[in-house]
Image 1 (cartoon, helix red, strand yellow):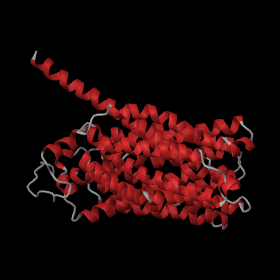
Image 2 (image 1 turned 90 degrees about the vertical axis):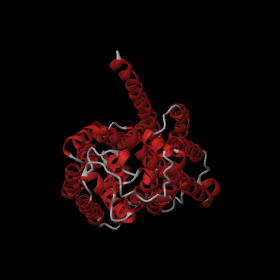
Image 3 (image 1 turned 180 degrees about the vertical axis):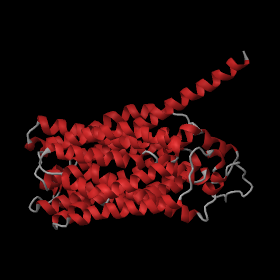
Amino acid sequence: MAQTQTAAPVRREQRAQRKSLGASTAGQVLEWYEWSAYAVFAPFIAQVMFNPANPVSALLSTLAVFAVGFLVRPLGGVVFGHIADRKGRKFVLITTMMTMAVASVAIGLLPTYSSVGIWASVLLLLLRIVQGFAHGGESAAANSYVAEIAPRHRRGQWGSVVFIAIFGGSVLAYTVGGTITFNAEESFVLEWGWRIPFWLGAILAVVALYMRMGMAESATFEELTEEKISPDDIIDESVETGDPRVVEAVRPKSPLIAILVIIAMVSGVTSAHYTWTSYVSTYAIVEQGMDANSAYWVTVAAQVVALAALPLWGMLSDRIGRKPVLYTFGVGMALMQFPLMGLISDRPWTLLVASMIALLIVGAAGALLACVMSEVFPTAQRTRNIGLAYSLSVAVFGGFAPYLNQLFNSWDMNWMSNGYVVLLCLVTLVAVKILPETKGIDLNAVR
């Protein structure tokens, strides 16, 4: 009888955790959908929101606005991260989702360059800045939240849902893009079709917001609040965990070193990710002459395959450790970037094969980002530090990847765009070498 009475609260807690995980993931998918929709429709947005007299300049300007949205992500990560470390992860996850949704609707209502001239470009830039600010906070809070509610022995698997949401949002955006371009004339896509994804995001936001309102707050954060530990407190040297790996993880030589190492670790992952999700379809369409609809659909297929593999990478890291899986990404991507990009021609199957292989490799590291970052930073400063390190790395190395790729290719120097990814993957390998192995540590001790 006692066992039954004990098991009932445990089952209720597990159900609450799964419900919260689902609500968090649904919101993240929506936010990444809204973020990715811009990249998916970049060739069309370039024609209507910038001066169409110079198509190359217009496309570069569109990708530059994409990159600027990333530049404000570190600021959003720090601001919302600070709020999340004081008021809770749930509060920030609801606030950032609402902000992204409002900005998305506004983008869908913008006047075009032919109507208001340069003001169309300016307004688009301002709204992308708002989205980037909110997105920085969302990413920081989501990475902390999912890792904190996950069972200790399955943190890698549960943490992979953060990257599943990234791929899921991108898949949804490309699916909408493929559907619109397949069923509509280009003139309609240029006039109204590119706006539809942003309006659709508003409808989905209502459902996701309702789900997030019912989320439970992270128990790790609540325990911290009950103990009244300040986010600015220094780690207590008396913390005893019984595991030397935890001591190494929670007591880096300095917080700055930990942040720099995470920035370096993420750099290769994010540059490869945005090259093979946000840019590669544009490359196939603009540089190789591939049919836009075909490029969208094969990109969707490749991302679905990679998405399905993400929890498997997380499970593998729960079994063999984080570092071996991260090494797999760094070595694999450094070796395959040049041949995979060189495979792409105007034939859709080339994009499918290249993207599928590349994204499977990217997924090895992407699936582990949430758990690794959460296992390195202390609870009292976790969201703030993740917000700074992750958002800064993504902004500098990921957000500019599509722009740099297109710029180098427009100069007939595509070897430089590939070399950029390879170099950063090598930086990731160095960072992984420095990081401690954190599989299975107790986050309650990481304070």
